[in-house]
Image (cartoon, rainbow, N blue to C red; front, side, top):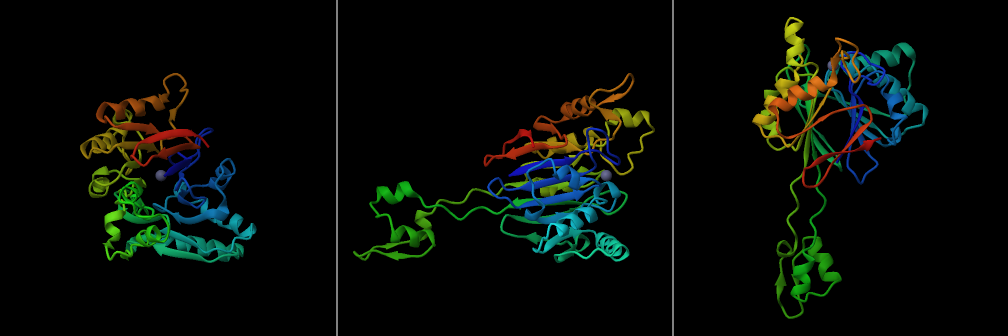
Length: 324
Ligand SMILES: [Zn+2]
């Protein structure tokens, strides 16, 4: 599974970070899925190999502008390119109203059907690559996490066993693969389940929207290999500023949660624009977020950058592949 970050800043863009957007896809597929679509997301896409024509569905975590103001422009561009395939949008119902209003005010007629699914009603999404469920979070407005569970490929034949038992390759193997019972010429009956390797457990990635209570993800996190979560501030900086998190999490809060539920991999994102790579004197450094999280979390920790491309292997180990 691949994760490609398109925007990693909270609230407003900076010179090096755009507002929230993230693409997820299976490694062997061109199809991809977009989670959040802050303003300018379509510009970010131009720097990647992701094609709008292969976008299968859009998931919006909540209605704040830094997570959705780019959606109408992206739809309009897909339409200008002549897209025909329907597009599923899983989002708070207000997003449907927003898009329909803008379409009406600006006479935007799309070349394809948009199928809205209201996440407030617990919309489940299911296609060839993923099964996606939503989890309600805690923020100033209703906010959701999306839990992407991959569909595991068809079961594979236990070739070593077939060979060891002298079962000839060909039609019989094909029937076993199709989970049929096979009667051999000598009357012996082969049961497909005896010759199929059990499929590996599907991998699950949780992509959370803005959230001040990581604990609400406890149940979902039990089966996940990766959590993508905002860490808008450090606790240290927030205490200085009066302690109001405006419904967001600190690096400490996410790290404590991830450690408690023994998550293997955590990617922090959605950083306040105050945290810089090269801070001016007295400015805040992005490394403070990393250091605070590392104090409480022993697993594999990553701080997302725009265009960072992560690969999750079949063993559930996440690594930074390269910038896109
Ligand atoms: Zn936000």
